[in-house]
Length: 125
Picture 1 (cartoon, rainbow, N blue to C red):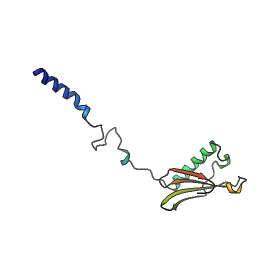
Picture 2 (spheres, rainbow, N blue to C red):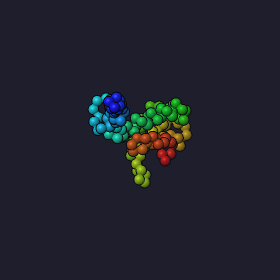
Picture 3 (cartoon, rainbow, N blue to C red):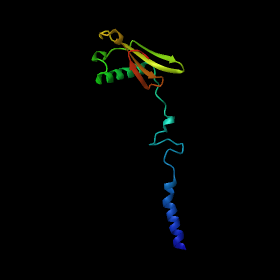
Picture 4 (cartoon, rainbow, N blue to C red):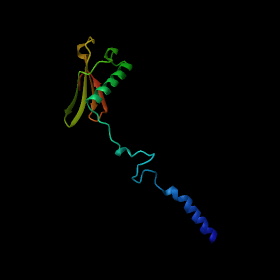
């Protein structure tokens, strides 16, 4: 009987860490583990961030040969937060007078209000 009791106590001592929750789940976020994603502050997406992100989109479009290399390095003509219905979005406008087709001289890069890339086109829609 003494052996069974000792074996059960040893088994309980070894098994108890298995049932413990992972570090950081008790509300204390100090130390090595970062806070959960919901508690981390989201970076602010403003006009400057939209212009910078639009430059990156244009660079990708040039690499994929969607637009001509003459679009590289052009400054944004306008960056504005537009409202369509219940949706707000950032529209960054670029103009390239070196493009022969007049309908394709203006390029619009569109982001959601939070900064997610939505579209890039020559119509602004």
